[in-house]
Image 1 (cartoon, rainbow, N blue to C red):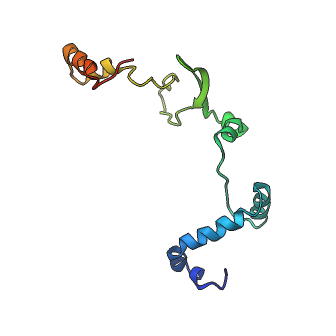
Image 2 (tube, rainbow, N blue to C red):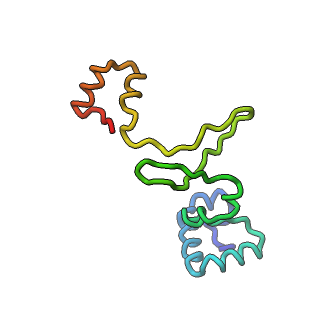
Image 3 (tube, rainbow, N blue to C red):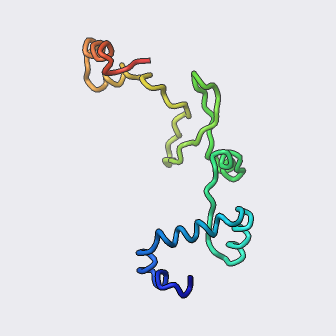
Length: 132
């Protein structure tokens, strides 16, 4: 590839990026993850691998950094999810909780948007809105 004119400069490589990706895809498919981890590290090439959800869930660094939060859900019970990464200095984080079910807060949201009780009833009766 060093002598291939399609990849001689950055500008040309960009033009032939699909071909370059296909070449790398084929090369990476020839060996397992352990092999590429070893080779890329040996040549000091920066890299990372996409982790599966299961791998992320078992990652001790992720757990130690406080990324995960346990929540209780009315239908699914207690489970682990990803905590919000946002922190505001001087303010406590809002308590972790499961996402609402579809239609769980329909009446409250429509009322807050200015709909009357009768208007909400009509929307629900017509199937325009759903309340669980």
